[in-house]
Length: 108
Image 1 (cartoon, rainbow, N blue to C red):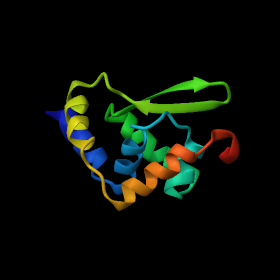
Image 2 (cartoon, helix red, strand yellow):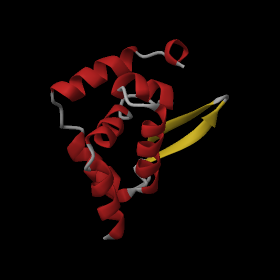
Image 3 (spheres, rainbow, N blue to C red):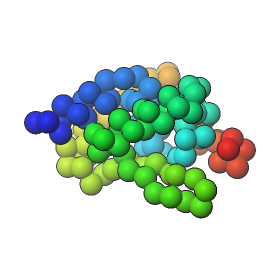
């Protein structure tokens, strides 16, 4: 039950929810996420830390970047993701447009 509470708590914040939804489309670094969300690097990093602790996302080092991606290993989150994949609204659609167009080289 504790794992589920961490997931729902992490996704209960609008920025963290948006980040999780963005990572459905591609793996991203902090700069790319900041380009969409618009918060400071430290705020984005804090959100990423919380999402990572909830096992919603994972990361890997890619040259000089840390790249974040959805952790589809989590059984609970996989089930929640099935529901989330059907969720779209104006903000999420706008985020998707920006994510798809964002090039790491242009924002980092």
